[in-house]
Image 1: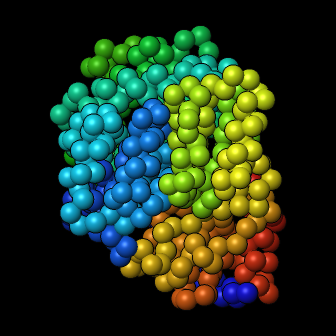
Image 2: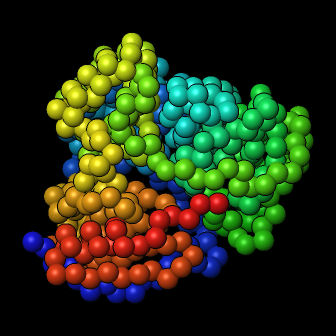
Length: 426
């Protein structure tokens, strides 16, 4: 068993003024492919995480024909294809465009919209924010100025259950009862009519871009604006013709991520370490309602089964295919970056080294200090320091990081997950 190295203190990220950007946004997309050690990488934005049956089938075909046969799910409910050949970009874009997955080539990287995966399914939310996601995507693609947003800028649409309010959206929409919504940008928030929520989100993005230009530091995200930088959200909403009144930024308490299992006539599963083979992906098909929802917890929701019995039958089949299907799975909440051999910066094959847990805090295995894809809130950071050696640290926003040591790596990670406090709610 691998031994855990004693942790060293590292400077907290994002302290002080954000650095001025000296290069353009290199965030990968479906058309702008990233060069990695295992080939090209494509990242496909899926507003609201929505895919039709045909689109899901096309992605499986792309993984089999053009990539390494796997599909990775990001923490924003997007899909990545790895191991793409040097000359396959044209064929990939043609496949995606033909399936309706590229409504605008110029906007494809700014379509970062996540929405409550169970909205409109279980009756618990105040609005079907999946409809908001579609309208916001249409608005984004209809404006030329929105191409100035970075590929990292995120819209989070919470239907009022609190599952996405803590996801770190730059612009967050929160559905409320009585046909209202709260639009939040950083620490500013306004209550608007629910019918105008997508338009309010677009106006908020415009307010951010104006503030970023005024700051002159090349901020890509709201959190990168200098402290004290004015963001005129009220003015942006007024200019957009959206009636608004000041609101509490935290309009709803955070809730736990969606657990796998049967929810009425829907099925939810998670992808082990955020990645599935093309065969595991095809096990999701056929889609009973012709719709697949990819979640920001690296999983999938299949709505529309005839009854609960049919849903449980599919859940069992997905378990046989290798998906995580129960809330007590030891791999639930365990994530990892790409690691070796796909990433040249990685110091270890973190996906091979990762060990299951026993519930508690989420764990993320990182091959280098960039910690790509790590969760928000409280989490266990397992950082490679060399081949087979790791630092294990409990990270709590706003507090000192807590180092953890043990006789074995498994013991250390398990201790870190289960002996720390859960994420506080607001």
